[in-house]
Amino acid sequence: MLSRSSGLQRRSAVGIGVAIVLALSAGVAYAASMSNGTYEPKLDASVPNEKVAQVEHALPPGGSESSAPARASAQGLASLETPVPAPVFDRIPGHMLSADTPVPVSPELVDVENGWLVSDGKTLVAIYAGAAGNDSTRGRFVIVRQDLAAGRQTMDVVDVPGAGAVSITDAPKGVAVETTAQRDRIRFRGTRGPKGDLDLVTDKPDTQ
Amino acid sequence: MYATTQNSLRAEAYYHGYDFAQHHPGGYRLMVLDFGAARKLGSSTWGSIAFGNPSTAFSNADILSALQCAADGVHNGYAAGNTIIAYGNSNYRMSNSGMSQSDAWAAGYYQSVRVKNLNDYQRASNYNKQGAAAASDIEPSWESAAMSKQLVNGVSDHGWALVYNFGSADGCPSSGSGGACTKGWTVADVAYVSYHGSSVPLPEIYYTVNADQWTVIRRWWNNTSQVPFYFWGTTSEIAPGVLTPAQSWNALNDRNNSFVLSELICFGY
Image 1 (cartoon, rainbow over the protein chains, first blue to last red):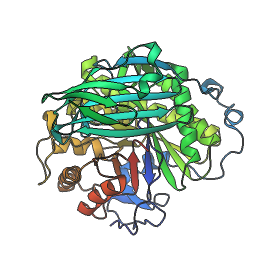
Image 2: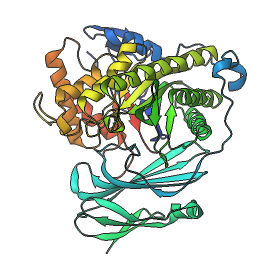
Image 3: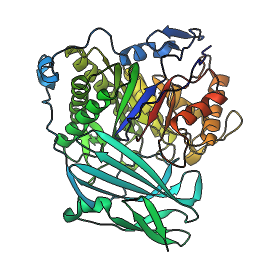
Image 4: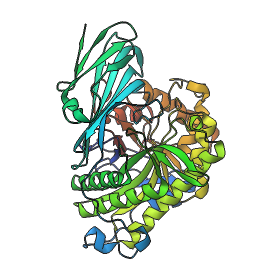
């Protein structure tokens, strides 16, 4: 039987492109007794026998970390060699997302109607418009922002209560707006009638 | 990942890895790089299509290169702790793209192969504080259960990689021990993609009802299997209107005391 002995400690750095799993604090301990399971000391938990090998593969082997910079230490795998990339990222003109573009956000969070994306190669903004997964009367925007060179991502959720599922009806498009559009306004309409703007400076909706 | 070119994909991966390592609080942590929807790209080529625009397909070779960059970034930014780097994808509309069930299986199989390739790279580089795994955002709304099971089966049949399911139990009942979910899925199907073979669950818990739904999943599994069902943690968001990461973990643990392991996954900070 496993038992939890202390509270959570969460890390403050996460992302969609980078979804980060956080472990609990060191005070969390689990007993070793799982039927059909094997105790894994690195997790301080028992895992099912059929998954033991896979869990061991996932866990780092331990020992000291190489002190060499990444490229010097990786020369042994010439066929896989990948130079440390320069911080140069794609510019993406403002576009409505095509229907076949995958969505990184769960339908439980937002049932997506459409989306919009722009990046100037330094920062990126993606907006997914639709309805809250648990309430179809509640319009919802999920706004993903990335600081690309910093490797960081934030997410904001903006609700439009009573609007029904919202769709983006107009948003800045093209190369010329790759930077300015990230702080512009987008037009939207809800299935229950309301229209409005979403201000990307304040992340506030303004309905008419 | 929002890249539309391979160079940008590699750069995204590197700098995400570097930043992750710089803020690593110690202990064992998992960093999932979500490369998008699993896809068949050619007669014998698999990979994924990313979230960018135009939506761009990246082969597993491209993805491995990016994963290696992520490993380099984690190494160069190393501050503390141990990091598991996961090759993430999703079941998003696989059949709409023309994939068959055998294609979905192959996508999972070669996902696991590339995870092993990443591990080989980490070992050869003496990145001793790193491990490798697979991850899939399995959403019942996005694809049939039959196709989604094959994606997970492929990973399990290869047998090397652990695969975290960070998806949902969309439409599943919030009480009882079985029943129907959305789009023809059943509680049994969600349990299968979450705990069969090499898979482990990191369920999305945005609302308390999600914790109820996943409790039904666990109950179903335990009623039909000799191996008890454990949650590896939870997936959540740091955003208004939904449970905080701590609340999501607590909501699941309150309903499944002692059956929730110690991980949280989040998508914004």
